[in-house]
Image (cartoon, rainbow, N blue to C red; front, top):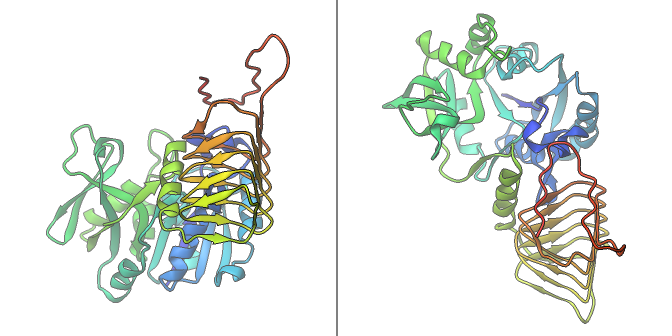
Length: 358
């Protein structure tokens, strides 16, 4: 069985971070979110994996290919499949027909995060006679998602963002399919937004009388499309963290709870209260790092306090008087206090940013 990871999309809800890179490479607990999808497939025994990359967004495509390479360091073999334009998830899967052939396969949207993995569900699909399995999760907002209507052990209807939902079973961005999917996708026409919709293709499988089964996600599932979703996923991963100190902690510093301090990271007169992770080569000096915080590689946090936040690589946070929390801070950011008079906030902020000032 082969796997497909779809890594298209512009990541508009994560801008401005995604103006300069792929949304699937934004880190959760200092690991790109796409890596979790890759590892889930491998854990389920799927090591031949195609990654759909956006041919029209060269920066994101190149970053993904550089981060994953040929897949060998993960124990996988990776093939890159370019999608010429954002023509929808159904199109992204359809262009993988030659890659997967007529065998069963698993599709994983690269910005989805599921803590429990998919090994159990993949095993059931591989050995069963069903044509498709859709992963479902009970959600509080079914009108904002695709939802499934289940009768017994079959899915009998799908609704896309229904005003009057018939169920609260949200469709997770993980699909287990066989060759009938390509027949269903071939008959699709673009939706109002000009894309081939995955829900339309899956609905056609049901209309064709094929065996489409549900599999419930009992643990946590997060579509990491917004910054608060990234923070939630970060919290879930950090909750499973095993403490490890590979950096240096001076005599005036202390760590409390489960803290990972990577090689070359330094704590100087600081407190880190876990769960938290401090990346390689980072400096935390005269600072407080609170729970559920991930500090990236090569960062500097000096005379400042952070909690429940993600800071990407090589950013500098210095002399900030108010605690920073619930924040997602990009790469190579400088967040420093100005000494100029009169005192005022001086900001250089990218498009579609949100800044909360005390």
